[in-house]
Length: 249
Image (cartoon, rainbow, N blue to C red; front, side, top):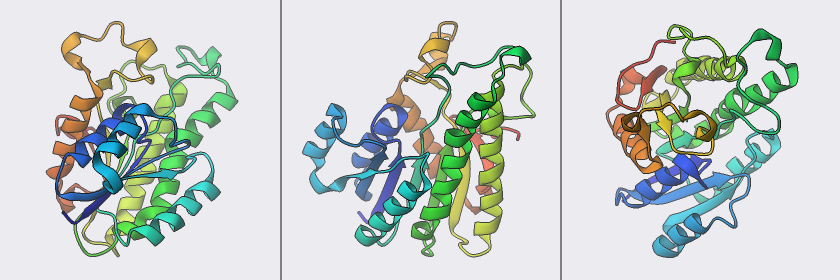
């Protein structure tokens, strides 16, 4: 029991399921759930009551670099090293933003809002937290992307803002993987596609998803952790689906 994990977006959805799964793994000494607001979440409260100081909380706003930097400084004072960091937060809809079906629906403010959360946020997490993962032992820095962010796999079109932001996220993480490989050889940097999961993000768009392709957060977390467990140094900079298959950029 000597590993530490940080889950960005760990207060709900896939992030909360990952926190719960990692707390159930005796290999992890501490699991930190980070989010813009970490209080007032009954399920997270339940986990904290059950696991005591193994379950920690960290306030962090993915759209505010000062908040990210402050959170990294705070965690560095508490934990000398991380072995797993997963950014799960994402933006697909809300506050008037919906996936575009046509060019006529594109709005610059929606493009920028999606880019801020889906691309800028994850790479700022890498910028400020990678030092906690560069300690000579195997460590994984992962971010949840989406298959629709694959340019090579785009056959349907639409969803301009989300596709473009996730494609940018993938490119940024791929570039970070190249840089970090030069000075943190045991650090693996990957993008992951969790499938279609029963969360608030997918709620308006899963009506036509076959039952066997709609995952619970717990199942998605189980599959993602299995993929992460199988990663080697050669996996860094790549993009994987929940079943371990590689997705083209």
